[in-house]
Length: 413
Image (tube, rainbow, N blue to C red; front, side, top):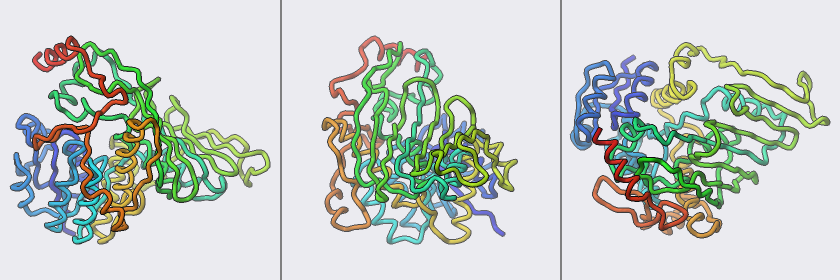
């Protein structure tokens, strides 16, 4: 069988994705990055000879079956559309679209194509999230009616390497990232386990600026507390990307008969609890255990990042291409656009004192018409566009002159 040929857009995260795709049997044929230094480092880190490009239009003319979109967080949709127009499959990191209008454009282009589209979201495939889905599928918890997802990622105020590696120019998207936008790590595992899709969203901020010595971060919120009402009657509470307490990825699914969660600060351990009157045969009221992979690719999984999730989603994508089928919920394009809508509209909820917003069903043309010209964005674009909405709950917040001065000093060192 011929190897699936893949091109990589974005030499930072993209190289790590590429390594897992190679581990799963694909071949990397081209790498594109607009930054010369990162492009050269990417080629070196790939450890294989590939064609290198500094512009996407030349890159996409190479003979390839699929493209990994690992460019800037909020700018995936335009490149995905170009791939669809050429019948190239798409593996897209994090949110699928940075604006509501892009979500409409993305789906319209996709529906004219024969491309496979998969959201490259790895957190549902962490071992504890796979176990929680398995237990939910088993039915012993009854109907899942409430779930929580926290992606909590605080960082050191004195970590100059983070600035150099991840926020290396003033207009970088991380310097203007609302706390609701980086949503998929907290939301997708709940959608994966339950099959639910959000239909309404509201959010409130936790404003507490990190007093970095050097920063250009224009967001003083530590977290966004987001609630969604879902199409199956359940409710989710998620955080987006938060920065409070200690680092953790925490998930809890509550059914009519019991609940299951991974335990913060305790590795991969699972706590499965039942109400005393609903204990299934072979279980205890309280079950504390560490799950197993039960996967023939466990050796490859253990070499992979993000708790093994990086390899599993790479394998899933290649399997979809080989079978000529779209991925299942929440990896399909409609789920991806729904999650992006949660991210975008949750931030609008924050800017509008917690008002609730309906999540549009972009399968319906009337919903597409409502949002097809909605280009509100808190980000700078590589095309020179500027933010047209605030990125922070306190709309006049910004780092002080001394912090910005020190930020540029770190970049120069």
